Amino acid sequence: MHPSVRVLAHKPLISFIGKRVWPATAGPSHPHPAAPPEWQKSFSEKAVPHSSPRAPLDHAVFLEFWEVPARFSKPSSRYLEQVEIDAILSGGASLR
Image 1 (cartoon, rainbow, N blue to C red):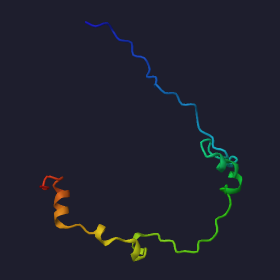
Image 2: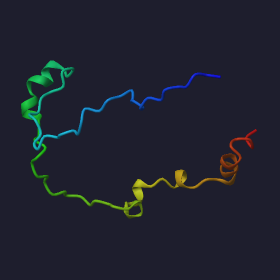
Image 3: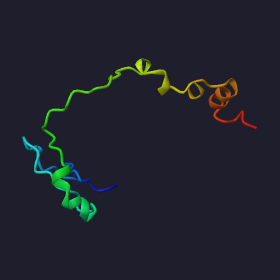
Image 4: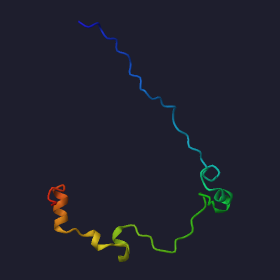
C-alpha cells in the first residue's frame, strides 16, 4: 500500500497583480525610439492628436461588400471552375 497522500490546495503557476487601471487620457505622443533621426526631429509637426475630431469624408463609405463599385470586384477571383471545386472538396486528391 501507498502511504496517504496529503492533498494541498492548487496554487497556479502565474499570479495576477489585480485589476488593470487604464488612464483616462492618452499620454503625450512621442516618436518610436527606432525611428530615423530626421523623422524624430520633425515628429511634433507630423503628429496628429488622437482626440481631435475627424474631418468629414469627401467620399462614400460602404458598409456592405455588395455596395462597392464594380471596379473593386474581380469576377475572375470570385468564380471557381468545376475542376477547382473538385480539387478543394477532395482535399487535393483529385489533382493529377
